[in-house]
Length: 113
Image 1 (tube, rainbow, N blue to C red):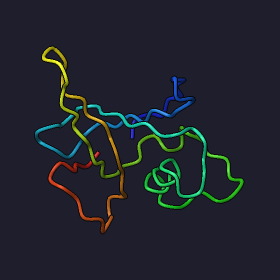
Image 2: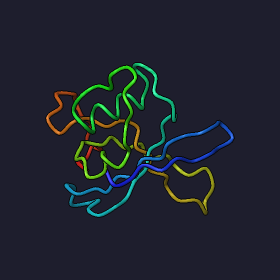
Image 3: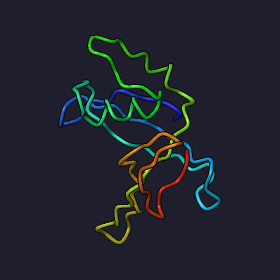
């Protein structure tokens, strides 16, 4: 994981996670992003991603330092959104992340970051 950046959108405050692909010959060096809510709630996507990045769940009341997560290695699952118009490009969005030792079944588009 390369960085976490807070962003403001029409849907409210979100966190943008940036990942650089390292273990895929086809996508080596490509940067992809994924969005989560900015608030920690038990079982939400942000909690799951933090758990995958650091290897342990967030404890109630715990403060998270985003910079401490930079450099974490995980498996990322990317969804490729097909363009709706001819002049648009394919949009790649990280939809899930797992620890490197994850027993989760992975599709062929899953790649290590």
